[in-house]
Length: 292
Image (cartoon, rainbow, N blue to C red; front, side):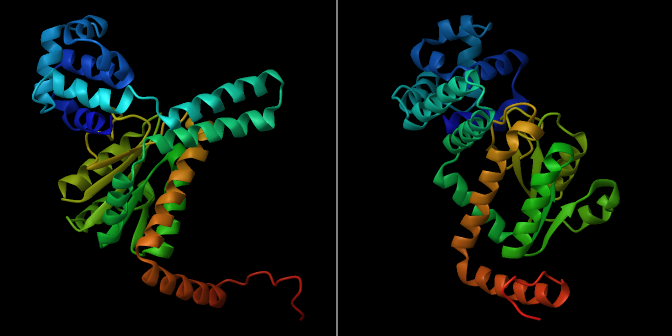
């Protein structure tokens, strides 16, 4: 399913309106596509068999059979993670009925994390880590509900990697910042509903300068989707700022941990230096067992 999602995200802006309608149907109901011929899928999607076939060609498949076989390979067999998600969803509904709000909301967070896990493969994580380690400069951008994860990631990556800048919108000189970007730079953009146009505009401008764009969003067809060179999907429940942070921060924590593991020696040196500098600059509270 991952390859189909990536192809639709990549080619979506180039599709006709009818092909976009069919592409959305494939993303929303992949099992229907896996089990039915193109004519039936055309009817179910409100398009036509011809549109489905042309969409396959537009996505650079040899035909409908190749797309269908790919979906069958990944979707027909029961997936352990899907079973786990179902388990947590059912448990959460039962807890809600019992008015156990603490358990209910924590079960929802676990469910969201499991869904995010199902979207992340080792290959995709490795690509993200490689892009971070290879970048000479990293700019992180995220506003409104995306500001908190953007701020935390820029802070964490500055500790383990360095040369990370959190773009602050009007506070920053965007023109100057964009002039410093080239193909050696990485843009990390957070874009969740309601999608802030400034995030998209900055990411697009950075991409035109040659920067590599890594996007975090809730849907392949969100505004950041066609711009991003690589996209990480976090299927957050709405509203994201209230219900979606657990899964997003879990993913970010995984990425930072993977960066540490991939470049452990350099990261440990940076951590030691960071700790020594922190002691010199910040007056931390003494431990209770210390005297004086």
